[in-house]
Length: 56
Length: 377
Image (spheres, rainbow over the protein chains, first blue to last red):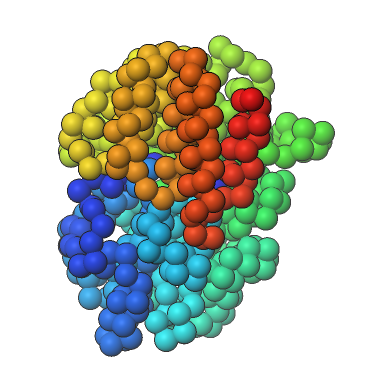
């Protein structure tokens, strides 16, 4: 639902903060490092897919 | 979505199409990214053109796997260029929406939806974005009216639950003296009831959960306590069923938040204890299970258990959510009769809230805490 209220989201669980890329399923997510993602995207000439989430 | 959609192996073929970035909005180190890409609701997703660092497409809220696939296709198209005809208008709408120019985006989405054929492949996504843009600009009547008109066209799509829930949310937010309100609330509640009465395959569980939430609020607005409790009871059963089918502790714990809310609303907080103990055991690094246990124990007036749970949560908590945990701690201490300690907890909450970076600080939250502190003396 496009609500301004908190939604069901995944708790932090096993996904602790890391500056390394972490594969979630098959996708190599860069965790919490926009600059690094931007540099990679420019080098590869592909868009960034950004997931903004909260652990609650 | 983190527990369900992004773990799906079918997305493997997409790995090279994007650089995939995950930002935890509670982390102080992410404020620069949050400043550039403000988040209005959680989760939010952005497709960003790395050449300009502008948002080509934004999606607010959860999504099913097919919706994510479409989002990815549309995002690549938007970055590649504006296209022609309807796609050009859609790209403009998406760009405005990505820049949080919600009123202008709503106008562009309206334009493209009016010109598009009934079976247009982008209709569902454009409609959902239009609804959130209208809701964000507090144009609740237009939001409700748009949802009511759109629902029959989207009733068999993954967007049906969101359209019904967002529309009903908007209708309930309309001024009570608006002559259109009662008809819109009634019609959208009927749409919402059709979702929970006959859940279609392909609807996300969190979307259906939000429909129950709106239906409970609708019964509350109608001052129908028995009806509200019936919705809450059905909602609890739905969430318990979904949790029981979860394949991992992470996937099961996704439902904890709504389950706690429902159990509290039913006046049955004890129903939350077992599941939260299991989540705390299975997810030892996560502050949410003990934080929620503190809330449940507080409602049960088990003050010492609530304080112990609060201690465990605070040992792991960080970011804006820590403010709420401290505020709950103040309530627990006040309930226990220790007014001095309750004031100290509130003062600590205020200090912490004020220390947060601008992107994470909530002036509204700080004002509420200060009011609570003033009233506690």
